[in-house]
Length: 514
Image (cartoon, rainbow, N blue to C red; front, side, top):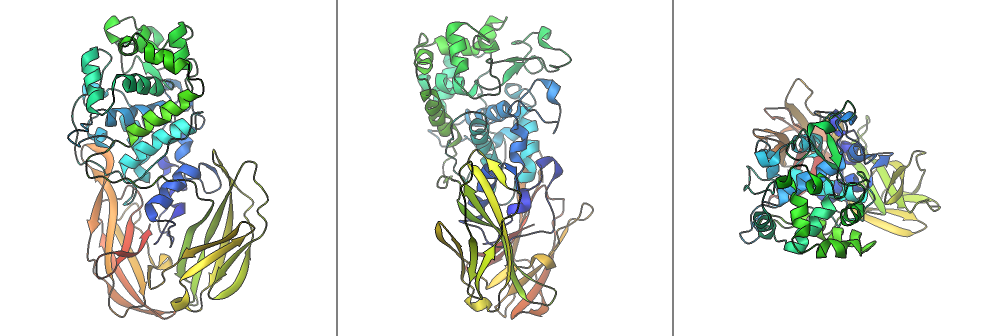
């Protein structure tokens, strides 16, 4: 299947590149693109997603503020996910991580800028295979894993809600029985509720701007415009200090939701004391085990989804991965296969030795690494560009990468593909998409186009689908029939759109992202 690993190469605030595409996803489009965001965080070919939490004290000026606001993006992302999750009714199979929070930002229980800030940042990354809900979950994984915490397993496949969900987010002045009732409905018992709160409150602050009944106006200053008071003394580091400071009465003593001038707003204190501090004491005695507890609780939180949603296997870093591997025609009409091979190493990287690309059309081709490398918490990545002519498309069913670690073989289908050089996404002034399909079949291909577009009530995009798109014959190249078509999306897309070639049963043969 078709890919575009480079489609997320720019920071979200700058949007996506247009008029570019790739050819093959490994192991599939959804996993490949989400693995790209998770692993390619810094340096060469980075997705740009982690820029918002690098360093973890950062609050980028992507919507409504700047670094002097006293906010941190990593903490905002945790809050967004919690508010999306906690209104779940697991018995009824409703709610959970479904991006319904985007429709709920005018509710008093969701005060503050975190929700629209976050959805504005996520927006350009949403496409027909990456939902806003998956990005909400992935943002938790990356906030914790990249800010000193342990790695939470991430699964894909969440489906975005089409409207607001149930009410019922605990507020600072919510009484204890009601708070525990909200958690219970979402599948968390009393000890779980205390643990999840402590885990979530190891990052971030409470702000006068959003919660004036918790934090007084004296917290506001020219360098702390929103008037934030930290929840613990290591506001940007995911660690158990929030527990120790609460138990010992040191530092931030558990934060404003424990120490607020307004007794009715001490929601964390009521929750922590509800079992005579037994859970908090146990968390304080865990040492590094605190991280494992948080992985379990936060993992359960992000995996709480509506009934009928089936999550994927865990998305894990791929050691040898083709990216932006593309079939296209050159100026002479030859079929060309090009792209990159990404190799992941531990840090510091070990010697990779020689890399070779092997296809049915040519002897082994030596690959040379780019000088620029990528870095992440998963190690270092090296990128090897390649380009080779395919003389016999009918026999091009796979390619192999040979390295000192062995052979890595990847399947290819070359019976039909979207032609990148003959496809152009609309500009900023038009909503039309013109595309060309190359097909070995003599009949016109079945084409589906999907685009993420804005929708009323939320900054999370909706996916607009055009089925059975008309195509017309456009000549031949390298043994392929060419078919061209055009779609008017009707509005500007917010992120990458897809063009899929379908077989007679409606299954995707090839899908390109632009």
